[in-house]
Image (cartoon, rainbow, N blue to C red; front, top):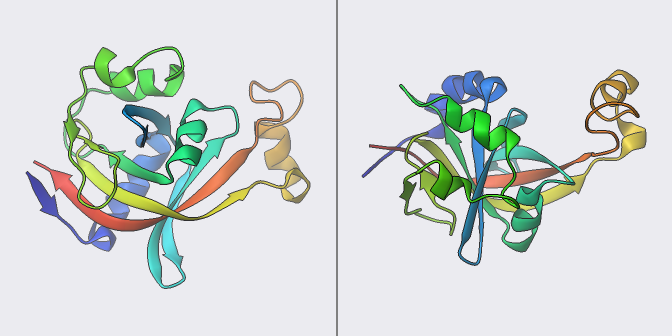
Length: 173
């Protein structure tokens, strides 16, 4: 069961949870994959509510998102198993089925093809309306040195920004 919500009423909870980690879930064909993200934002673009998710070029999630430009954002709300975010942030869907391994419960979506994850019940359903690869030359040098520079764990692994129109928002009960 879903309790539909107005996303702006929950913006403080969403933005507070984001730096600690939320799940970005994708689906292509019959494969559902989820990964922990800590970068993203809420906003308005072309008069539509959006969630912008940033996904590194090397991520398996990017491949699935490029094949099916829809996603859900699954946000902790209430008590939850924190190991979900840990595992989804360190393991790749190329190597394991995280949904099966973590015994995650999928909830049928309302407006997209990608399910919600019941264990992180505050859900945004999103359809990509724009995407933009980062231009390394346009990034602030301090940020570039910290997140992308030679010798860092993610050397040269820049992000693509996916602007997802929020087409539904709810809490899975």
